[in-house]
Length: 128
Length: 128
Length: 128
Image (cartoon, rainbow over all chains, first blue to last red; front, side, top):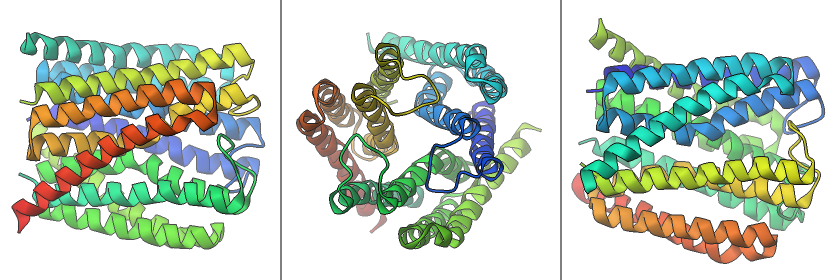
């Protein structure tokens, strides 16, 4: 069983859910009504934060779980926590200004690439 | 084996696929050509239905499977069916008007949150 | 263990990641700054390639894994490779012109539908 990886998965989903709710709150604040997806820079940044988090989900989640299966539960969960921290930093930075989205993006990117690289390395080792 | 959860997963994917096809049909009806993503309210609503369903996939699918593994196959599949029903209601309502998207959205949201809450509760119980 | 399916999953993710990086490169080339998502046809096509690949991820990945579990690792991985090839052809065609996105889209669509149909057939056989 992969209890730590399961927990980190559910926490990552909860944070992603929060970025979705934040888009709804931003609609109220900026007056951008559905189905419009643009028209106010604050709304557009809130939307891009959610979208970018969504865009990384199919990279992060499969890499996290393959890393957990092929390497280990605790190591996968640890890198998963780093990914969530990077996403929180990204959220705070990008919410202030587009120019401040870099550091959080880098942290989550490095964590996701480490999960991916570890997983593919371990899979290839089993196959050769 | 998680036969019921597997079946519900494949049915949920099929419904999501239908929302994608509906965007293509809406392009033909409204004359909005790729790669444009706006320009006619009917098209924009069809696109938002697909996008919102996509946006909830990384919440729904991992929560569904972790619920299945930690609690049970039949209970997970039952909540998964509720989620699909909510998505169908959402599709029908939002296709008519943006103001009619509420009830279906609420149904699918409650089902997804129930899956998430059940899964995280069961995971935490194993860890403590 | 599903080594081949795991490997194909990680390669599919890598290709999807490349379509994300291509959007960033296209921002630099066309001068479309974040958070704007439109304003130049070349950028809009690069963005639609990424988005469409993202949109198919929740269809492809669960169908691939359920096919692997219910039918077999090597067959799932083989269809997964066809999906990636279709996505590469789609990328090359759509990058040139919207009208050239058809063949690659068809290849990846057939591969994904074959995975879905095989998986649901095998699941239903177990349940009846």
